[in-house]
Amino acid sequence: MAAVAEGDHRAFEALVHRHLDSIHGYLLRLTGSPADAEDLAQDTFLRVWRKADGYQPGRVRLTTWLHTIAHRRCVDVFRKKKRELTGTEIPEVPDLQADPAKTREAGETHRLLDLALRSLPERQRAAVLLCQVQGFSNAQAAEILGVGTRALESLLARGRRALRESLTEQGVLGRPAAPGRTEAPGRTEAPK
Amino acid sequence: MSLESDGIMDLNTFNEHLDRLGADLAAWPEPLRGEAEQLVSVSPEAADAHADALTLANLLAALPAAGAPPHLAARIGSLAADPWQRLMDWFSGALWRPVLAACLPLTLGFVIGLTLNPVPEEDAYLAADVGLMAFSESYADPVGNGGLNED
Image (cartoon, rainbow over all chains, first blue to last red; front, side):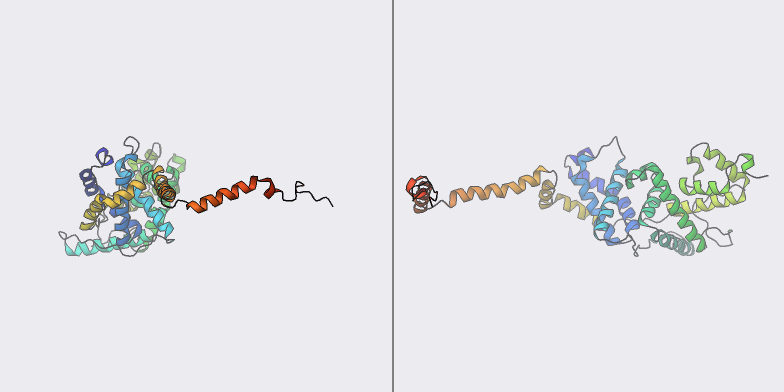
């Protein structure tokens, strides 16, 4: 990052390659639009290139800083456009090595989960995405969203509750495991 | 025998914490963690709620990443290297830069105005004459009474 701040273009390219997928993935799920996600990811990294000297390594992790910039750009752009972040075009990603039947079933579950995510208000969706998909802690996600930890936990609680209710309605959660039902990846059995 | 009478967290409180803190009980702060683990071990409803929360967390963590389109990294790299873009970046980098950029044409215009459009010689003499007339008594006070009306 120090090299990027000194204008080292190769270091910048390495930074882009290392973090682009993560930032683009976050923006894609937040906006729901591949075109918007591309523009915002590009804008985010160009801003990083310009403002690299503003990064303070001791204060926040680089990924937290990058997601903070990406999130703020996203909110700014959509506030200017005066439209809510409710995209409809998240592309499906086929897993070519998986069993086709299982892939179809998992794809259906992911589609339902994507629909449920999209129906969440923007801030709840961002909180859930940051903590559950991008892997940030509550404190880091709060830093990215520019809110306190308690406010972040409140957003998470409402988001998780809405997702759970939606997926229970769709039959993904809350039913006893019937024959042929897809087990969630890595699901841990609760103690009886 | 109720759970609360045993000093164990009740189901509603457990569900609230589950939504707020997530399905990973190990990440909960003490003493909530101990109370929650105790509740899950004795209450089938709590165990079901915990299982659902874990399933949701695992589904979210397993969402397939679409990955950025291949051309995007190259586009970002070329835009960052673009000299025009760099110039624009330089201007937008600090407050004194746009101020300097605004002052430059102003200064240039002032200099050009002074050097390329001098006042013609005749106009210069005329301006000097008009200036002198203001100090001349006969022009400034033609009646000679200091401008007072004696009626």
